[in-house]
Structures are given as C-alpha cells and as structure tokens.
Image (cartoon, rainbow, N blue to C red; front, side, top):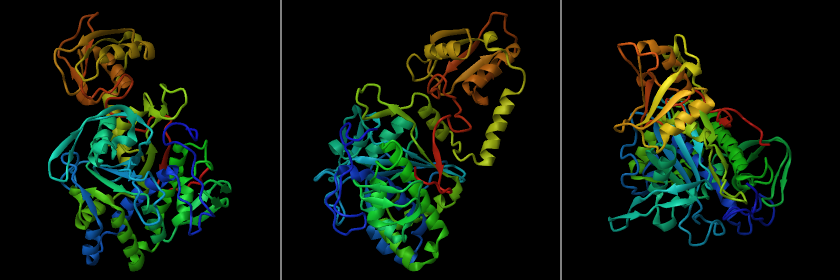
Length: 506
C-alpha cells in the first residue's frame, strides 16, 4: 500500500517537536491505526494479567463500559470449546489531549481488528489481524437502541471492513457479524478501545522494550531510535506505532508487523517483570486497562473479565501466534488502495482456525493430526489417472461440483472426474462413497482433498470396472483445493510471529 492512495490512506501527519515533547500539533487521521491496534490487544492482555485484585473490584467495575449487542455474541463468559474474542480499535475522538485524533464528530470506524482465537484445550492462541482496508460485504445486523427497541441496519456490499462499525448506526455486534461472514468463525465477545489506551498502558507498564534493525529517523512521526534495543512509552510509543515510512515498503501491512512485534514485547515484559507482584504497577495497569475498555454485556464486569482472564492465562506465551489475514491487492482497482482475501491462503487459514488446529504447532496437536491423517491414508493409492469419480454439489457454493472437477483435472491429473451437478438434497458434511475394490482410488482422492475419516463411506460389494466413486460436496466444502479438514500446518507463504520471541523491526 502506498501513501496517499485511497480514502483514509494518506501520509502520516507531522507533529511539532520530537516524539517526547509535551505539546504537539493535532495529528491527522493517519496516526490513528497503530494506536488502535496495540491499545486494543494491550488492554486485553493487561486485563488478563491484572484484574484479579479483588480489593479494587468496585473501582475497576465502575471503569468498564458495555454495549448490548443482542445475539451477536455469547451470553456466557466462557464457552466449552474454543473461544474467540474480537478486539476492536476505533478512531473515535476521545481521551484528554487527543482532540486532534480521528474525525471530529465521527462515531468511529473499526480501524484495528484482531480475532483472538483460544484453543479448546487452552494450550495455544492465534491473533488474526484483519486489515481495515479489506474489501468485503457488510451483512444486515440488528442493533439495540437506547429505548430498548431493535433496529436492523441494512448491509452494504463491496466496502472497506472499517465501516462495519459506527457508520449507519452500526455497533460492535455488526463488526462481529462481518468477521463471522468473512472467516466462518463466530466471535464470543468483543473488547473495544480508543487510541488513548496505548499512551496510558505503555506508561503504566514502565515502558516497552523494542529493537530496530537499523537506526530510525522519521521526520513525519518524529520517531528517532538507534539500532538495537530501546525502551519506549507514551508519546514515543505512539511515534513508533504510527510510522510507516521507516519499515518495509512503507505500507499498512508492514506497520502491522511492527505492531505485532511491539505487542509481543509488551506481553513478555508483563510476564517477566515484577508487574504481577508490584501492587503499585498492578493497580496502574488494571486501572488503565479497565478505563480503556468497552465490552459486551457477557463480560461486562470486573468479575466476568477476571474469569475470562484466568481462562486465557492458561495459554503459554510461546504458544501465542500473531498472523495477518492473507491478502492481495484489489484487482478491481488501477491505483492499489484496498485489498481482498488471498484466493487460497485466506480460506486455508480460516479452515485451520475453525478446526482448532494450532498455528504454533503444539507438539501434541500436530502429532495427533499426523496420526489421524496417516491412519486414513494407510495402504496403496491409485495413480491420479486411474481415479474415477463423479462429483455432486450438496453444499452452499454455486457451481462447486464443476469447479472441483476442473481443479481435479487441471491441477491433480484426475481426468476421469465428472461433474454431475447438484445432489438430490443439501448435506452438511462432504462424503465419498466407494466400493472395496476402489479403496486405493479413495485414499488417493482423500489425500488430494484433505478428506476426514468421517467422509469415507465404503460399500460392501465391489464396483464394476467402469463404475465411478461418488463424491458429494457438503456445507463444509469451502472451495476447490481447500482441505476440508483444515490443514495440520499453516498454509504456505503466510508470515507469523510468536509472542515469545524478540524480533528487530526492519
């Protein structure tokens, strides 16, 4: 993404004086995103670390703001399976000294968005960043009005993701529903912060250690840092998080990488320092965090947040992975200002999260996934040219049978595959029906398509020489070439970062 292209994608605003000066000119809207990103997740992590001070319950409880999102989330604090928390950073102009941030009078946009997925066994977590300039369809959503009534906000096709909040009266529940429409993952709760949080939180924690691969001197953000390690807080932290011109190809996506590195460092600081045993620092952190938060009613008290924090606290830092939704430049644009999901990598990543497969490759989960796949594929496999299969569409995607046959023939060499159009009825799960003497063909096709053991439906009598297997695509089918079970590892080519490892920003 180049500076100055597309709505809301202009160059960073300049400010008077250095990053540490007390008086600064009002920054332009471009300063907001970095602040949102780290403020949101940092508030979340701080709550997870520090809300347990019962004696301060009433104070912290009074700090928290809530929004009724109706049926968009989970009414219970915890869920029995995986948990998904959507962290939203909004550019709404709030906070002392922040009058110049954001658009005056704006209800705010969903400018920073992270889907925090915690595995069912609580051994790992994945933080998925969703770019604000992702082009998507905003679905219809119901919102609660101040008088208690319900109002349906009509959806909008083909717009930036960030308008899923604030615009047309949309609340965080609308953003949650937009995330679900994109990923197939329903968020249980949301946490929303404004851009003031990062200054307060980085100051409260005593600064965050960062590392630069080369010296940074950005006249636009007034960021000056030497090569190697530094400690930043307050305005200096803002200067680091808002700059785009110092890293990578100066895009928002490169800035997300720096923000992920920053957040990982802050998590490590909280885990390794005396924060949790220092009453003064703990109070400042918890007070700042709860002041920064707006949440759904399902977690709308200090006690509920503490319960959530204790559950999430089970995840080891080394098993928290940051990843950005895989995207490509919007092919509909001549001047590239927005992005769209990568045609294969995005859905592979979503499938992985939906199947609760770890991005951190936790050994037990990886071993189990490999064992299950090995058992399914044990035995001889037919050559692709010898696989004969009829494909029917019993799922939700129009033309899926034809698209699958094209992929099988052109990409996998299964020339004896035939499009049989729509199945007699819709089914939830994909199935492969085959005869005992077609087992080698079934194993070959299962390997190509990532079919789970439950999809395999062996018959009791042998098939004729020219008889084909029957593959019926179900609602779990997401696209040709996308493994139905979700891959055991991350899709090829995506970048990920661990909260446990320090990386120097490039």
